[in-house]
Length: 228
Ligand code: IPE
Ligand code: IPE
Ligand code: MG
Image (tube, rainbow, N blue to C red; front, side, top):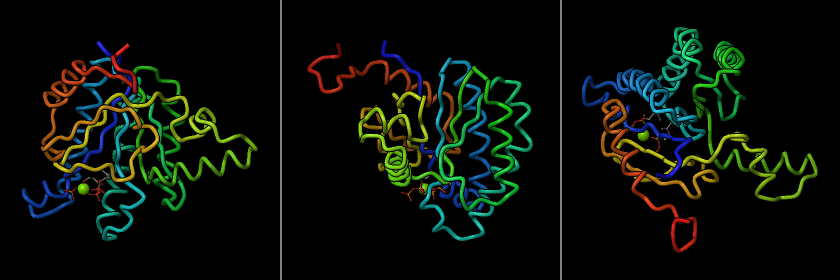
């Protein structure tokens, strides 16, 4: 069985789901948060050490202001309401992405959640928020230049938002769309990718288990001719 430490998810399809059910995209975002909670609990049970969730991309700023505000308040309220429970579950929360240009109250909830949970060891949940992979790679190049470090793979890895986090073995994208949308382009170089037809609010632990079972049947070769 291949090792499995890190699962990354592009949680796509909330808007379409909400439109279909209630003629309201934001209804889908609200439902999506419930699925996030279930999936985190399930990963704890399955002993997955790292879970990364794409919640807002640097390109999502192009959306109508009303939807952006809703998404931001959803995150802020989630952190405010759930952080003590998350802490009790020994979950470590880490944000990856730009912390610039965020509302003060949201930023302080983010910083508080990270600080409170930083020593928790059950699972690390990385929330990719205001995250874009090209932005991350360019930032990293600038950091290396400033630190006068050479452009090596190791130096890049040690200065990405994901420093100290192993690359994901599995990427799941729900929402019946087959693209990466500027998500973890460096870290996904050798990741097994699973595109799921279901919209994120319909995704469940059974779908999740099916993907993990499929993953364990794959021979990962990393350029070699066999899996050794
Ligand atoms: C993903 O769902 C969540 C975010 C991007 C915040 P979408 O909002 O992209 O849903 P669809 O793809 O429009 O259905
Ligand atoms: C990717 O989904 C971003 C998140 C899930 C947060 P999008 O819905 O924004 O991606 P595109 O625009 O369809 O590529
Ligand atoms: Mg989408």
